[in-house]
Image 1: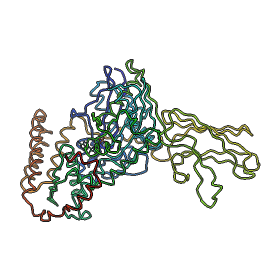
Image 2 (image 1 turned 180 degrees about the horizontal axis):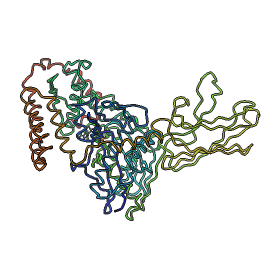
Image 3 (image 1 turned 180 degrees about the vertical axis):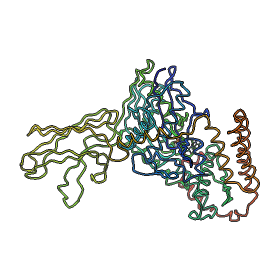
Image 4 (image 1 turned 60 degrees about the horizontal axis):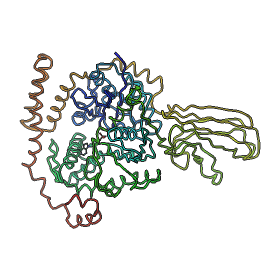
Length: 602
Ligand code: AMP
């Protein structure tokens, strides 16, 4: 049995794994036979950890024991309290990775030792290192982190090799937006520039739709319980998905606290999400500016991420880039497929070894210098050595001099970031050297930064006058876990119960039932309860019956779900204020939007 390498798209909302097999990148199905595993983790009272679909159901029934969207906080000190325990984003990510590893091992029938994990291009070093640590906590060797757009371009290039093409990768997922320009020629894929907004994603549309729903129904958001709020958000997401297939959709919420519905159209979304569209435009233009490429030089646009499925998003992109068509091909899967290609390259498979993947540095690196002109300003200034969007690997040198007469020590602080003042950037490391007392500007110091494709920064300091040379290799552990923490956690995880894959489906059906139980009232509740109890009994006593009963429950719960959607129609008192919508206001906004949503109205 060999040891395999897999590629993992560790997404904000969903995660996928892929492997290189028979000359192509293939997605790996999970225990449900599905490719998307929700990036959700939940903890039970007895300490059992649920990951994926079952955990996603618990977002509603046990919000205080369930975590999602933790990728947004990778590399920060944010803590999640699930039940009695405290988890960091990298630990929660580790549970997701462990689940994907197990699914892959079952699918391949081999041990998986290593993974290539993709991260948003905008992740800083701390978030990248946290991702690597998450891999280690999951029992995976992670030598290579790749930018998601590189992976998508790689997948796109493999499917549709086009010579000398400039490709825009527009990756709009659940929590982040990344826009990149990639040049493909021969078998080389080179990223020209990246830009993005790591706080903008499909979730923001869900929140806006939920807010709109709350407003339309005159509900008081602050008085709603966490459970009701979670139900509203789930319905908002469903409504958003329905709007992908239809021009308008009905958002229905039916739970213990409220019972309401609202008709929402695509056009409504363009109006109450104005701010989101505006934020979407900025990185598109920034990336064109950074790469010095005009919009009409783009040969191909690759859409990535679930939120790209929204017709209003595609429409808006076409409008701002002045294009007639944008190809939409498996936006959910492009990154994972690209990670699978990378895994193939890393495994040195014959059929991919000629693909060369270059990368760029998504942020600037430099040192702090004295602010001599305005000494009253407390912070030093940033002097950039490696500018954002430089191709990797890169090695660059700059010369600095002593700022003051008779200065005895030269301090060199190394920063990452784009801000002018060092206080607003991230401090990566510090170096210092003793220098002979001389007038200001007389002692030179050469600073060489070498940054490689794996994100390792080597800094060399050289004072020619004294011949002193120093070196610093930056492994950033200021935030997140130390080596010692990782060792302790690994020991702890040995004892941890991860819900076994074979019971995943059962657990999902139970959690689904529990959520419906909480949402329903009256006789339905009792019906659901009886079935859950029966299924629990079958699971402990009559193993052969499990698949049959599970199937029966799935059909029943789907039926209840449907009934709940229509059930709300019976109680229409909540819709007394149907005239809330103002036609005139609509006309005005319509004029503002003229151009990019008019096709939609045809
Ligand atoms: P990702 O992070 O790429 O998995 O994207 C997940 C996001 O895509 C979530 O916000 C989903 O709600 C959204 N999404 C997935 N499918 C659709 C769809 N058919 N229409 C609209 N949004 C979708």
